[in-house]
Length: 325
Image (cartoon, rainbow, N blue to C red; front, side, top):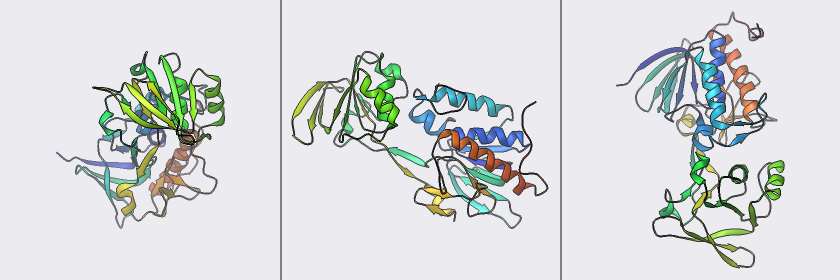
């Protein structure tokens, strides 16, 4: 049955930025609802790369994606956020008193005094490997939730971005062999990661693409070809990771009259959108000089929450003081 909620701040998106916002809102004395279309908190990190190592979060020389999410959930738990998971925020109505009503696709209704969108890239769908649909779930995957599923397998990774390179490096010592193919000789991944890739035991084949996947019940063999010479090679493979990126869709957000630039929401220095009382933080935001890092999203979340606190209570201060005891 649909449920009604009443909170100070509704956070749309339960990724790292949204979870930190839930903690920080509690620190500011605000009650929160955290809405996400996924059934568990964590956003893209939990759904797509829970076991990938993350190196650019302050205070952690390295931390796995799922471990980071668990720390964020634990931090937010001190203020008991109301999680509305498995719900997509469908409509938003602003009332004359400055408050908002958000209705989810399942009919839950949230009355809220301010809104913070931290939905990353919106809903995301992996780009498929052409002519390979029959092997999806039978050796072909688009992301690796558990590295151990690749234990002692010969793995082919297709792609040239951060995910492809990171999975190749993270599977070293787990997979029996790793081959990474990319249709170009330039990678879109972090330079340091690419250097580590070439220094690793991973076989790297550039200007190379998939010609055909074969197998009875599961992937058994993949023929690849050089896209410059058409030279072909058959590889004995039991698992294919097609890390070809994702298409994203802001979905219902596009109908909320928020000013959007492409797939991103424009914000000012307060992280406020074109609608007063609606803020945004994390990868979904756009402004001059924007850098899309988890660490940046954390800072934007704190900025957004502090300014939302003033929108909710004009007598409050933007800067509440430091949290140190």
